[in-house]
Amino acid sequence: MTEELKNGINLQVDGEIAFLTIHRPQAHNALDRQSADDFLDAVQTIDTNDAVQAVVLTGTGGRFCAGADLKEMADTDADYHPWAGADGPLAKPCSKPVIAAVEGHAVAGGLGVALWADLRVASETAVFGVFCRRFGVPMSDGTPTRLPAVVGRARALDMLLTGRPVKAEEALRIGLADRLVGAGEALDVATALARDIASFPPLAMRADRAAAWAAFDTDEATRLIEEDRGAQAAKNNEAAAGASRFKDGEGRGGKFSR
Image 1 (cartoon, rainbow, N blue to C red):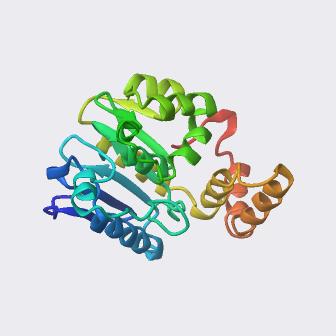
Image 2 (spheres, rainbow, N blue to C red):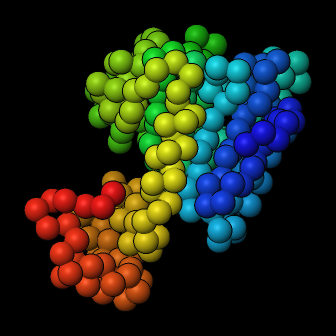
């Protein structure tokens, strides 16, 4: 991945992995209106690329994302289109698993970007927080909806109401981060994790992932029906081959080849 990055949102595909990179160093990787639109375009490109099986989401320069570009907001006096809502770039999960590699700050809307991912690999430099609380800017990026599902309502309210910084070790402890790595290691670890996920049979993995994303959407009975419906393609196309491998001895005693 040596291609020179252009200012804004960069999408590079390396085999089965797409790398979605925020590169706005002049604004600590904050997104302006154009880059938010470009983020959505990049996700739509990933969704339609059948070769891509997993996504690594990151920022450059030792930073993840500082949220919305408040300087642009102040200079233009224009409302930002919600990043979540009905049709924003974070309105729905990507169709492929997303692993966020978080170095430095993932704050304000940047927290929403991180929560949009399935997993978050945080370096010891990572800081999460609702920093926009100080400026009267609401979190219209999915954070108030997704954060309670990730860390629980009480912890989510603590972050939403106080705007305090949550550093990497605490993020790991409360479930906001899924892996904690050394400074500068988040991208490599996230990439290895993405390649591992991409190596699995995709239909079963995506069916289980979709059920997990929908886990709090409706009542349990409806969710269980949807879970079963989503699993049918995997059952019809992958499960028999997997059962044959098990029958032949793979996985006996909890031992796997990978």
